[in-house]
Length: 435
Image 1: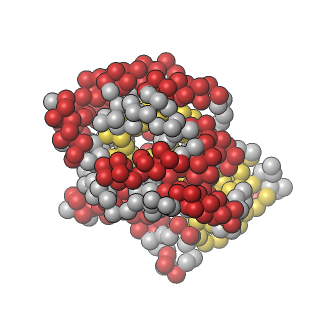
Image 2: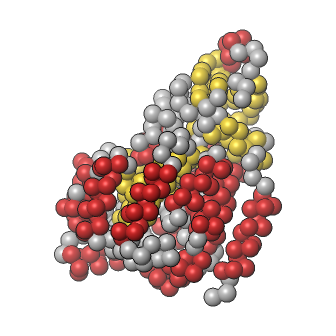
Image 3: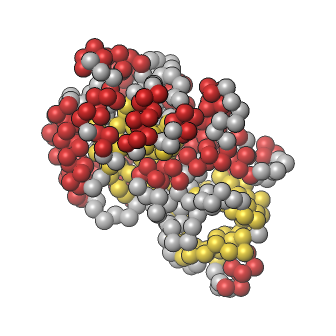
């Protein structure tokens, strides 16, 4: 692959908080090898391939910190329902009837194509058939943290918690050493995993050196049920079990007290905020401004397409900033820069990949996106960071590189055939539609 010089109007490295003009970013193979004035780059690398981006902002790829990628094949299947009704009466029965290696591979590829088209270059997933998720990511050149789901109850994938864990261990071993793929153990939620299984997850995660990814405090019902069954709120139960002492990504954390926010900060728990899914399922309003003020590392996720119904991190960015302002009563809560950090370097930090991705810096992996701000909806362009958070439409993402490989060029996917993806989706729709 030739050395590439990217020549944007604005270059936004994220760290530090600055917008560079008249600068170039140079990619060689999978890495960023230079960020320097454009004239110097052109003189130093005269044989490099030039990518002219005259009205574009260049920034690190967005990181989706909580996703169920394969659930794109259940997009719109069961809408306008409360979480437990949605899960118990619609989603889990459909998954039980249809989820397979083929389902997960096809659904994950559909999700990856959508995410790349919208500027997302990495996702933190949680689902079944972990090997199919990893294979879909590798076949697509996409960066994926594969969450190996663990539950107590049987599904077509596993009969019990022991089998979920055995399958997770086998999958982690199979894909060891793949640069684009990593793994977490993903106990589904406090209401679907026992104390004993949480203990095994903690031990195995420590032995394997992997993180843990879990839904926590998503709804008030979850908390009320825990008080009835265990006498304490879920977070306190998990803290007693030792889960908060592991590298932990807590998805949602919608309902939190002051003491719980302080505990999350003290233990270094990472939070994956999912504003659109929380709103659609009426789960509540997470205290994101308070969590950030306490020093918690908070990233942004889409959740699955069955509960969102799109995998659009730019839309989530806007919602995140606006909800934080509205909930706190302060227009200065969660400014644009901080929101953009949540979708980039904060996500990388939560995954333990902040030395590799999440910002534009020499030596890091070349996970880079360009967005075209010449659209009438982003004119005039006084402040590109403001537009990225408050005004941008994901269709304005024009170029995407993952590990230096062009995945989107001029708005066109380079490794996917959209017609084939749509045909696969319709084939699954025909199987699933009768209810």
